[in-house]
Amino acid sequence: MCLGIPGKIVERYETAGTKMCKVDFGGVIQEACIETLPEAKVGDYTIIHAGFALSLLSEKDAQETLTILQEIAQLEDEEKNDLLFTSNEK
Amino acid sequence: MEFLKNYRNAELIKSLLNQIRKITTRPWKLMEICGGQTHAIMQYGIDQLLPENIELIHGPGCPVCVTALELIDKALIIAQQPGVIFTSFGDMLRVPGSHHDLFSVRAQGGDVRVVYSPLDAVKIAQANPKKEVVFFAIGFETTAPAAAMSVLHAQN
Image (cartoon, rainbow over all chains, first blue to last red; front, side, top):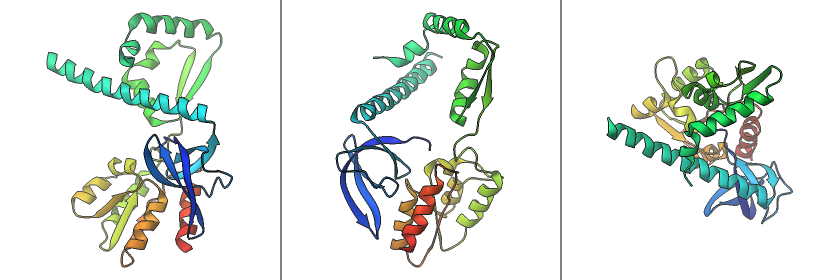
């Protein structure tokens, strides 16, 4: 719920007068609303939460956050394997 | 790189705890902001490892954590009505009400759908003009603008 994910704006458009964009999350393209961030341009990095852009951020900050998210995913995988290993031992 | 090994390395943890003890020169109150943090701290006994001078306060929680039981019970009743498409963030589906949760309403044939954004509920409403589409607008300052924006967007 609380996770805002950084992505790169690849397209801007309007739907029924609402400012929308397509955001590239490391290869996955999703639609998001940028009514809250009208100054956002194609090529900018932004944090998206629940389909809405929260703020702009630098490419460096975006990459750092993405790296941390990947580490968390890896940690979860390791934890699953660890549990599997422990239950096999019993 | 293996992360878990490092988190379970007793020597590393001891040295970190020593450093925390060294800098704890006065009482500290730390508030967790998320129920997930509280859960992890309790599950792994981190609260018992920290110096006594550090007091943990269980903080406000996210929109899902703070949703009152009464609201969930109301949502469950709405979701069970015929002709209703009930939409919510995925995290809400497993949150128990007094008797059951939104997942069980779905299992019993209720049309409960997960949306990533409140704007998705507007799309569902456009595609289903004969149905009553309800979005469970949980939360506070972090989610209220998105919910309000979606109402505006639906009007337009």
